[in-house]
Length: 357
Image: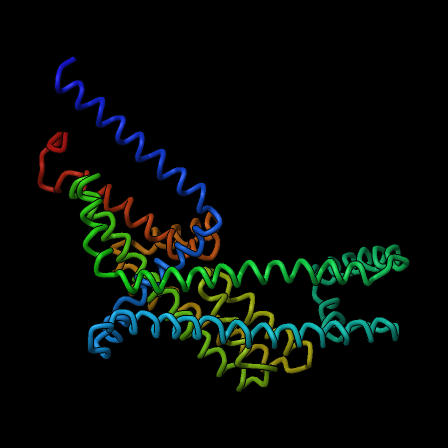
C-alpha cells in the first residue's frame, strides 16, 4: 500500500476516534452540559471585569485567590436575588390562594376575576374555565388532600435540588475556568487551528464576541429595564415594586416576554380601581420596551457580534426553544459562527464570478 494511502487511512481512523470519544464524552456528561454552558457564558461575559479584579491581587497565589473570590461574588449575585424572589413569590402565592379560597367559601368572586369577567371575549373564556375548574374540584372533593400535597412538595423539592445542583456545578466549573483561563486562551485556539485551520480560530473568536455582546445587550439592558420599571411600579402604587421590577428584568431577557409582567401589574392595578395608574404602567412599559428593543439593544448586540439584529433575534428565539434559558446566549453565538463561515467562504465584492471556486 502506498504511503499516501496509509496516511489518508490513518487520518480517517484518527478523526473517527476523535469523533467517537467526543460523542461518548457528551453522552456521559449530558446532565452537566447545562452547567458547563452556563460557566462558559459567565466566564466570557465577565472576562473584562475579571481582568480588573485580577489586577487587585499581587503575589504568587493571585490566580487562586482572584478566581475563588470572584466566583463567590458571582454566586452571591445569582443566589441572593433568586432566594429573595422565591420567598416573596411563595408568600404572595399563599396569600393570593388564601384570599381566593376565602372568597369562594363566601360564595363570592375575587375582585380580579370579577373585573376580568367584564372584559369582552376574555370574560366568556374565563367563565367557562371556572366552570370546568369547579366541576373538577367538586368531583375531587372526596379525595384526601394530604397525599397530593406531599406529592406536590416532593416534586417541587426535586426540582429545587436539580436547579441548585446545576448552580453548584456551574460555579465549580466557573472557578476552574477562571483559574486556568490563560492556559485555555492559548490551548483552545491552538487546537482549533490544528483541527480546522485558521477558519476554526475565527469561528471561535466570532462566537465569543457574540456571547459577550449578547450578555451586554441582553443582561445589562434587562437590568436597566427592571430598574426603570421598579420606579414606575413604585410611583403607580403597585404592591412589591422591587419584586415586580426584578421579575420584569428577568422576563426582559426573553424577547416579547416583558409585557407579560407589566401587563399583569397594570391588570392588577386596574382591578383595584386605579385605572389611571394601570394606564401609566402600561404606557411606560411599552415605551421602555420599545426604546430598549429598537435602539439600545440592536446597537450593543449588532456591533459586538457583527450581526444584523434580525439574525440575533432569530438566534435568541431559536436558542431558547432548543436549549432553554442558556440558549439566549448560545443561539447568537451559533448564528455569529455561521455568518462568519458564510462571509469567509464568499468571494470579495470586487472578485470576478468563480474566483472562490
